[in-house]
Amino acid sequence: MATQIETSEPGNKRSRSLHMVSFILSFSIGWFGYLMPVLGNFTMIPGDMGDARFNSVVLEHGYQWLTGKTAQLWSPSFFYPYERVLGLSDNHFGSVWIYSTLRGFGLPREMAYSGWYVFGFLLNFIACGWVLRQAKFSPLASALGAFVFTFALPVLHQEGHAQLVYRFAIPMACFCWYRALVRRDLMSAAQAIFWCALQFMCAVYLGVFLAYCLAAMLLAFLLICQLHSYCTVLAVRYQFDNYGHNVQNFFRLNKLSRTPHFIPKTKLHQLHFRSELAASKEAL
Image (spheres, one colour):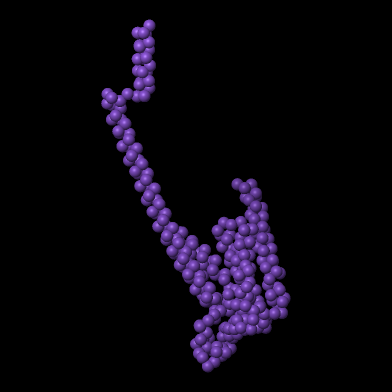
């Protein structure tokens, strides 16, 4: 038993090392190939003067409210004279804690916003990689899948809408929802609902599409279960009919073998040979 433990530990360490190296290398490609150029080595803000400025002021408003410098959460001053309008669009309730933490460390608004942008890519990469590893994919396949999910071209094309960066709750919700459907597990279903709600708080538009995705998964699962049940019934019925026909044929042949008119094929050949032999003897 001791020898098994000694031989298994290096294998586990080697697997963990391969896992870490695959993930670090994959994320490094996205870091140096996209994040650093688009941020200008943390000297520029990705996007245009529209959504980038909107996201910045919403995040700063959340930080100001958390630190007690602003009394009204749902009525930011930049929407004056309109009140209670923060819920009409993205409010970043699910990711404002990252920006607030960076601001709490003394970073200026621009640097904190850049850090918030980078941290979203990191969370997406980690969440997708973890889900793929839970699905029994190899470390290399999990790293490549996480890279595609995080740095795919359609994703990079939306850099002007930084509120769409935070998508880490999508693979978590889909994985928990799938496990809830397969295992009939209420805890997994509750976890899926939690991740879906968190995605709503990170980006309300992606939260809506995630809810549609979970509903489609439920519909597909019910259809597959119904089809499987129908095929199972057909298979059982076919086997039962086959068994019934075999039993009928057995009794029919058994009854026929007991009649005097039933002569096996071998006996017919023997009688025919004997009749020919007798006819030849008479001719001689």
